[in-house]
Amino acid sequence: MMKKTSRRQQILEALAHMLEASPGERITTARLAKEVGVSEAALYRHFPSKSKMFEGLIEFIEETIFSRINLILKEESFAIARCEKLLNLLLTFSERNPGLTRILTGDALAGETERLHARVVQFYDRLETQLKQILRDAEIQESIRTTTPTGTAANLLLAAAEGRICQFVRSGFKRKPTEHWQDQWPILIEGFFQETPAISDSKSASYNQTSTA
Image 1 (cartoon, rainbow, N blue to C red):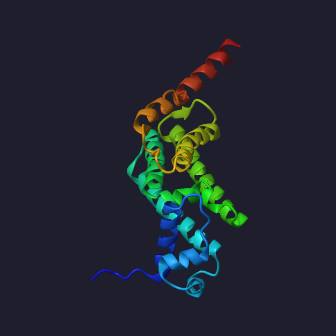
Image 2: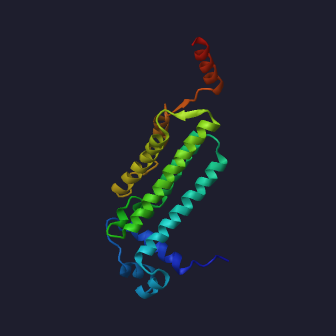
Image 3: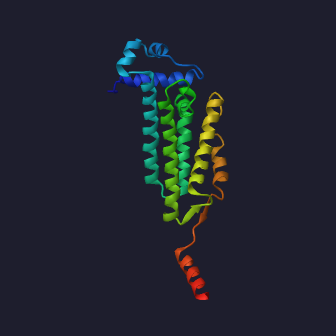
């Protein structure tokens, strides 16, 4: 027997659908209530404000993305594969959820509370922090490091993915985030890493300088 969808979930799904179906239009609680098939008063029994509805969608995005990132980190040992799968996850999620992607670009949050914009900023900050940690781990576990500072490198990777997400929304969902990504990724990552000097080599070089002196 299928589990019945809760009214709260129905409201969030309806909001996500309206964000996808009506890009550029402001969604009112009256329109949302009509879409769900309930009164506005019924909406407020589940969410005290429209902002809380948007927060519910942002929480869904966060839980979905970061739970899957944890799986990626368990399944993959190498930094390049981890970064590639993390960014591909973000792009694929955006492509499959156009309405939610409008939240990630801030497009759907025009006129909404600053708290919602801060939550989206926090989401991207968490992604960038995760990328930086992957790159730092690579130096310890794989003896490779980025050719630019770790923070700069992580920002470059995220900016490339975020740019494709913005293109997706700006094109009215016509330019898919994953389009050409498989061809572009090798170019983006070429020359990204360099081997770290072996500890023994560093010690040897230090010893030789001391002996010469």
